[in-house]
Amino acid sequence: MLVGSIEAGGTKFVCAVGDEDYRIKDSVHFPTTTPEETLQKAIDYFKKFDIEALGIASFGPIEQRVNSPKYGYITSTPKPGWRDTDFVGKMKEAFDIPMFWTTDVNGSAYGEYVMSTLSNEKIDSLVYYTVGTGVGAGAIDKGTFVGGMGHPEMGHTFVKRHPDDLDFKGVCPFHGDCLEGLVAGPTFEARLGIKGQDVPLTNHVWDIMAYYVAQAALQSTLILRPDKIVFGGGVVSEAFLVKVRAQFKELLNDYVEVPDLEKYITMPTIKNNGSATLGDFALAIRELQK
Image 1 (cartoon, rainbow, N blue to C red):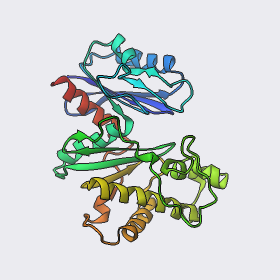
Image 2: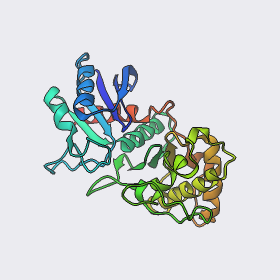
Image 3: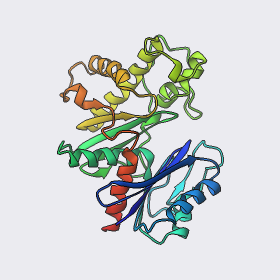
């Protein structure tokens, strides 16, 4: 059996084909350009394989309510040209197979959840944050995604400002200094005039950002009480998470019990940003078995 995965990011698409054991058999990636060109490249790729189901994890916001006339659409995205794109509709025109449609971070969250079950880690719930060009998060409880009216938008919650960062207005086009507006990759250039990869970890801006990311972990801890919080994305490194854990410990102040912080606040288990691909494979198989 072969199933397909599309991890649709604002910068690039990653398409892959895998088997029932979630092993990647083939993959390709290409830049995210216009909807017409990018979706056609995905269709052309999967036409080479006899896939039985497809999992799609996309940047958003998206419409995931199946009773909505815009189910399968990317909706109010700030990405130029992609607003109100009928993603699933386009794929359905090309392939008459079951498809699972969710956000990129939900796909990653599900991949990490599945991997935890495969490794006998035995967790019931987790939250997955990506901190990169933007910030988003997906949450899973006992194998089910959290969200009713729509998917969570945890990257756009507000956090307490760091006293050394009060003059920074933030970069979110919708909210200014929400979490995304304060810690996404573009904030490095907005604050310092240089790209994040060129900013040494000794720079105080990393302490400021760790303070905000720790607040995100605190929000998830107190609202959802997950077994694990995973942070992925280009901004995150193990050295950065050391700072986040220290800030989190101080903010939590032993108010509720959490696991050992090195096991509770972690990098993704699946390497090379492969969480969404594995999650998509698993969701495609789940859809096929309905």
